[in-house]
Image 1: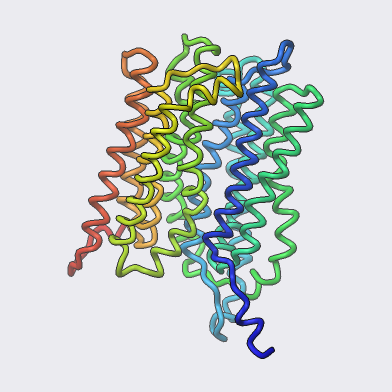
Image 2 (image 1 turned 90 degrees about the vertical axis):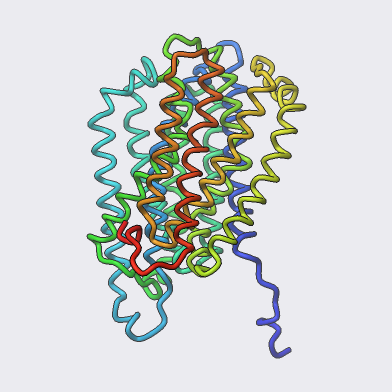
Length: 427
């Protein structure tokens, strides 16, 4: 019997995180799909376009907040020595840091809400300011906890954290839809799972965090690194979860009936490729950091895998996608070529989701930031070009990510070449 425990097979952390992401992502799929279906019903208390804008606005802020998680992941690691134990006050500093950032974000969103709420959400806009601000602030705490769990490789707790958030959201939104609730109640159902997940997981891992975690930078340096990474994460979010909001701003004269099918297709078809890699950002940082000598080769292999998956998904979208969407949501119709472009663009965005962590792991914050900003600027500029809706959307989906991926790839190639002085390290 000796050695039985040690011989017991262990589940790969990638499998755990991907399984949790599949549960959370599947729950999100069902939320969006159910919302679209209920919005089709006669006398619905909300329309799908407004719900999509709220979802997109929230996850645009959440996507930007992902920079907090990435930097906390990079800065934290498990401690084991007596010297490490003497630095056990660090987790408290992380908590204070997270609370300060969350409070600041809430104040900014709540104070500026009156200037953008009605533009985004129409007459219901003012009622959505508080749930949006609270949800965004709560996610800062979620991101901080997840970053610390990644840093100390607490895979099981992290998987529970990821999965339970999506499941709670599905139950809450489903209940509101069945009860005929409007957009305001749906907004609360979307954001409340963030604090609920913290309340469930934090007590479970608090002792281990206090005992094990070591942070390699002070609060000032952490804040500076987070600020730069957040800018990159905001650019990331603007071309993924924030794309519907940008599309709405760039198409003020377009009817909701025209935009709704496009918004649904953007939300549903890009997720299978992009969302898993977004969920694995912190894992990829840890992976590249642990294999620094072979970063370029690992990057190339991962990009090849993403490309093969994207090619298969694009072909499926072109030949079968419009029929599937029309079968499930009868009032939503989208042209097959546009659907294929949406899916194909996912490969480019997914490529950025691989190159970004590789650069962060090597402390190359400047080219990381430059790549995502270039991608975001290219996307926004293309959306506001004086062309028809389809041309603008296709250009925005493809041009921005191509430019950003080129910047990241050049930076990774340069990083793989040893040199005596490397100015990028200063970024």
